[in-house]
Image (tube, rainbow, N blue to C red):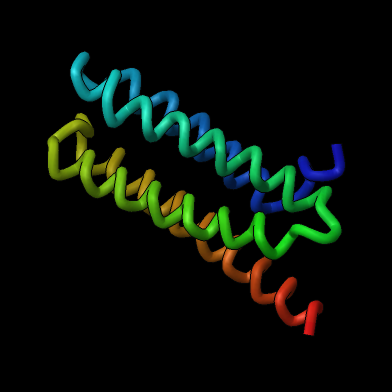
Length: 118
C-alpha cells in the first residue's frame, strides 16, 4: 500500500473517520439525506487519492475529479450548517478545516502534475 504514507491520504482518511463520527449525531432526517451524501463523497475522495497515486497516464483527470469532489463536499458541509444538521459549531468548523486542507493538497498535486506534463 504505497498510498498510505501520502499526507493527502492520511488527511482524507481522517476526514472520512470524522465525517462518519459526526453524521452519527445528525438527526434522523439529516443522517439519511445530507449525511449520506457527506459519507459517500468523503469515501469517494479517499478512493480517488489511491487511484491518482497508482495512475500513470490519467493522473491529471483524476486529480481534477478530486478537486471537483472537494468543492462539492465544501458545499455539502455549508448546506449542512444552514440546515442546522451539525450539533455544534465546532464540528462544522473542524470538518471545514479538514476539507480545506485536503483541497489545498489536491490542488498542489494537480499543479505539480500539470507542470510535469508540460
